[in-house]
Image 1 (cartoon, rainbow, N blue to C red):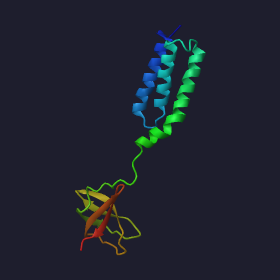
Image 2: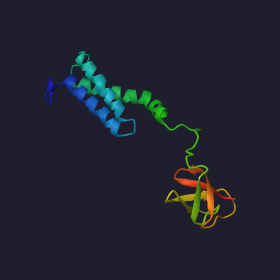
Image 3: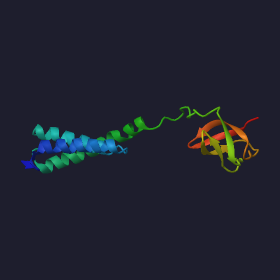
Image 4: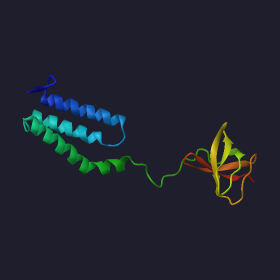
Length: 149
């Protein structure tokens, strides 16, 4: 039997490969399991284990769903950001100039390397515009600074 000019095992092989390629363009770890299901179905159809189209669709659904249930959480954990890792600290120790006042209750802005950055401080004392600060660490896209003494 043929479908779109391909034998059914060839069709499932193409489906499996296309789904794996789609996974490369996404980051949800979903299409990889559909692709695996397509490849397993292609192998099973080629071996004659599932000769009918209905059996192949059932094989595809069960293997895709089964592999997703069995492996998705492990795959996501493997690629998840590691906790407890040191924070990005390239800027730590560098100096910047305050352009918008910073207090412990509100964010301000600093001029650093020719660009304005959002800045916060852990100090209870406000840091006023024009003061020099030292960058202690980064917090996402914000700089945590202290007044230069």
